[in-house]
Image (tube, rainbow, N blue to C red):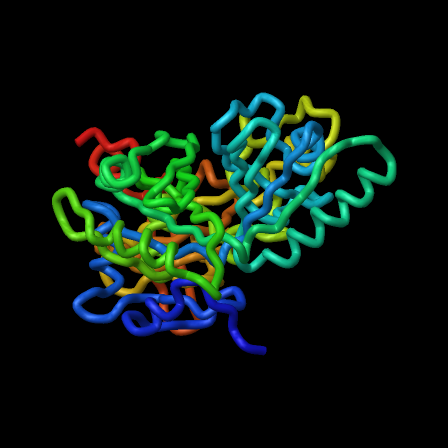
Length: 383
């Protein structure tokens, strides 16, 4: 089966190494003089631009839209203000992850749901199936539209991204807020969200298709031509992964999936999972496991010395006993050490561990997220 392409595929393919990802052909790293470290540090120190058009996007609208979404999502969306963006989950009946998503109320009774590229088909079919069920047993009035292929989406991330966005488009809504902008006749939705731990935004370009990508290309190139202190680099999948792992953001398919319970991540209470709601998928499973001390818990990992980096599926050992598994691992261009994420039992009693593969071992410490100094880097930096 041929790979899908985003509206910027031709632009990327002449400038980057392209790889298959979630059914798409996507840039993993751009050609010299760029590299993964340069892209990574560009985001941490100035700004970088990612094409995330491969991700799923749907609109849920109508007078009962929020009632419908509140059945699907454990967060209390009924109190989500207009123009607010929220990180949320779609859970299964076992309390595991169907996906992690963002929800934005971009107009009155109109919500944009953004979800992972690898789950585009699964999530769309599940939501449509539940829509049919709800409409067969109730009088709820709402509609659902898949806009994944009729829009493009960028992630513009880094400490310089907010001011550049404001100067170029006349709008920057602020963290976890949304606003519309019009740029030379092109309708944009700007959301103060992202997947790097930095300030910045995600930009949705309306009415954009592979048949006519001209508006998408213009917005992309005009962002890259602007700068505050340093050049803005286009960034690929590889640096997006190193950045999100430093920030402690889980990757679907590695760190979270159908068999990983929301309770294990440490990203649950109080806002993300509201147990006072009468119903949401996975509620009973979460309530039943609240006092389960045997559930492995998510942790950060930083190697004690330079050399090899953690890799997925390495055993995490304490006193020669396996206490968990690495779910993600890489080299951090910022820390210049190996970093990782994993799940272990008895998290409170562990400081240093051994990461073990078949042919080598790595010594690492358990670390809190983010793995970088949040006074110097990230959206909450002081300098």
